[in-house]
Length: 248
Picture 1 (cartoon, rainbow, N blue to C red):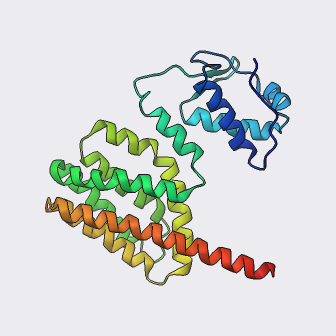
Picture 2 (picture 1 turned 90 degrees about the horizontal axis):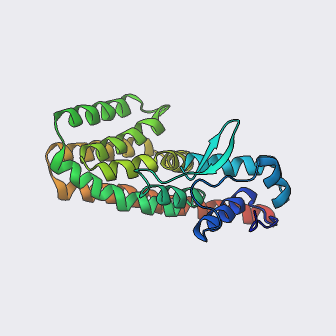
């Protein structure tokens, strides 16, 4: 199999991902093709087996490759969710660029909450209400904040009753979880009262969905995610300035 080149970069696993992606795009790898073994890829790419394993595992989770234990690694054949898989691939490659993920979240979730206002039923309200109550009970320690936050946003998507949107949100679930972990860790450590304010924003979104106030729900959701973007940019800027100062 030709097309693989030695990796000469600091981001080894990302370079491996890019090479496999490009081989699929160019048609050198097609659904059903068997890849080289982990050892063979390591030798061909001149990288560690750990880096190869990381890239292959990520592609497997994204639904691009299929690892068949005892048989080998194959390019996965398109299934019913083949429309979703390219997005999963893109998000996978962008996982270290939180700004990009937050922009995708904003595009999806503002619409999702609008649909939730129109289509939610009593079971949806019960589920979302339980999550809001759990968020309040989790204050001020916020030991379970990441999980509750993620489940809240997925519950809103489910309330919108759009199967494609639900699948898109589920595709983003792991990467959203990574985003929430990083943003919350940075934010909570830097801003007093953040946990209470985040809870109140989720509560207000729930109230708007309960009242079928689509305009208000979309507005709160947009501002909620926009503030995360702004605060993240500010904290990253502060961290870079601090690191620059320490290096002097």
